[in-house]
Amino acid sequence: GAMDDIDFLHPVKVGEVAVLRAQVEYVGQCSLEVGVRVYAEKPAAGERVLTLSSHLVFVKVDEYVKPVPVPQRIVPRGAEEEALFAVRRTERVREIDDEAEEVRWRFESCRSVLPEDTLFGHTMFAGKLLMDIDEAGGILSMRYCRGLVMTACLDALDFYAPISSNEVVTFKAGLNHVGTSSLEVGVKVLTEVPWTGEVRHACTAYLSFVHLGPDMRPGPCPPFRPSTPEERRRWQEAVARRARRLERVQRLKASINGGR
Figure 1: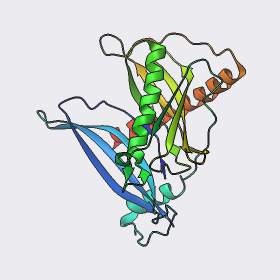
Figure 2 (figure 1 turned 60 degrees about the vertical axis):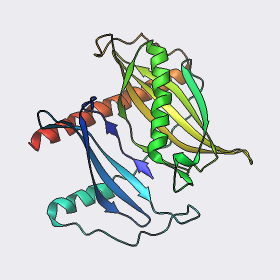
Figure 3 (figure 1 turned 180 degrees about the vertical axis):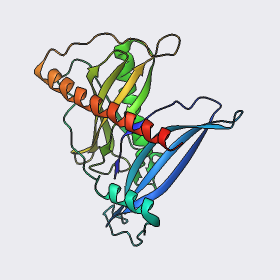
Figure 4 (figure 1 turned 120 degrees about the horizontal axis):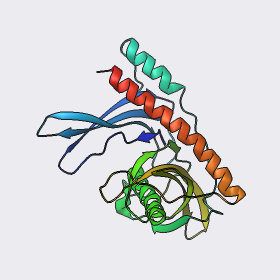
């Protein structure tokens, strides 16, 4: 399937309650899209704050992990659901990214897919994969900043190939851009069938991390200057993504404030 951008507007702290709301917003030929919102609730005060809002695409598959038609359709109820349905129908475009190589700051790790990592004992659970991606990007970020970091956002990504049990997954993380207190890391995920040597590109993710100082507030990142053509290209592309990211967060915050 695929996943839209995830922007963490507020952290969920220890002792708070994470409230998740999900609804089907679009059904295609072999897939369906689910909108998800997560709120952080303070039990003592009874207050809820929106933490993130995103969309996920799931593909219906058979026992051979081949796409099959979704038997049920959804019919929008009212003008609001009809508008949401139309928007989601036109936003199913993504792009494939490059390698996380030929950069000075990079991190690579491998792991095998165990039965407990999978859905129904076969295909790797996307949530588990996202946790591994976040870990790879976080390790590289901590090494660069020489301190703690916090995930700020995860850009939209597509899953190009399923990852099955007993396959070997490689995470290639590379530093793309460094700002005042945040940095962007790209993580390319490859899956390998060890008994045949076949390697497939599973997905590529872009994550932004914030460097935390001793007071657990955003602190300055060590300066970084791209010195090779590859590093400069990645830097320029990251700058463009950052501009789109800031605009996206502003729109999201405006929609939240407007809905109050």
